[in-house]
Image (cartoon, rainbow over all chains, first blue to last red; front, side, top):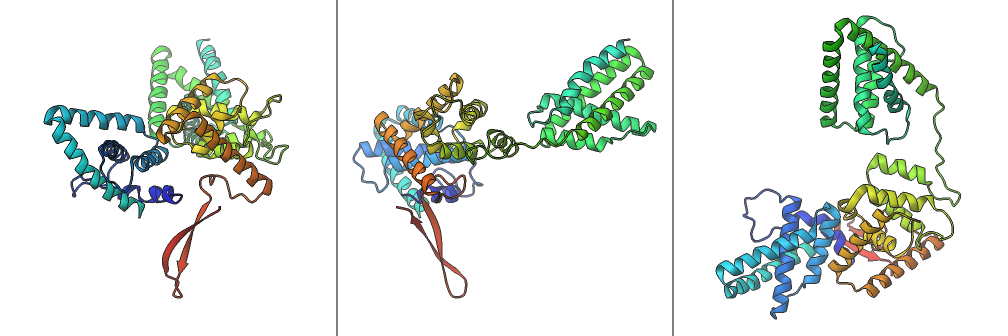
Length: 118
Length: 280
């Protein structure tokens, strides 16, 4: 995973998350950070719920670290925001729905990570 | 008499703003430089022959402020306000006299500054590395403090000698305080881990606090325990020291992995693939 960091720096803008509509402009650094932190949180939860993933939460945390390093934005803040967002979702939609949503989202995050790593 | 007092009060910091050579001629002196430019322009329009033109003062201004439009606007406003005020208090004739006086003093100061011998900073240390002063000017000019930190951490992999003073270490501490927590997030892992685990300065508590906070957040992000992080830092420092001993290191800023990207090129000169080759 040594060349990983180089791959991140050059393809940071290649991250298109499921939530962003296809006609959106290039995501701003803050949006990128939020998306990466969201994926990190989701993948962490999914790992804890026995979902088989190719790329674990450690990889996503590396992405967040590299983004933090390149953009200078606060990664911990984004992580907290993602956690709060999914907590709110769990409160509104119910914990079961939230969990299944997170599991399916984690598969999409996996695909995104494959794109980043290539 | 008020005009003399006012000019005496205003010329003294003006003197400092123009004659101080360091790039730390900070931006709050910059409106004085702007005032110089306006005064020199006024004098030229009045036909007073001065050895320095207002263009010289404007280039100095843009050097100091690094072409910041907001600072330019701010300087304009402040100087307009102060001159209007002076005119209201003392009349337009007094204002003209004052502005010509300012122009004359500015011209004298610039001539004096040009007459100083160009300060030759010692580029190299006794140890053969760049001196702290030249690193400082580099950092001020380019704004890239992370590269300077990498350089210093490379050349002092185990920190400073505890029983001697170290200007480079003090510089590192000052830079940390200047960039603050948000700036430290951009620094490389090697720099942060090394600075947190070894002693680089004698006494700089705010810098210590900042670097420990950043060290802890990086440890948390990588899920290192204390011992793991120290082992990582020790291994990285040994690696750096070995590189320095063998003197086969690459240039500044490449402390990351030891990998380089190579291209596979066709006969036609087309790049077919890239692969990375890592040292060790």
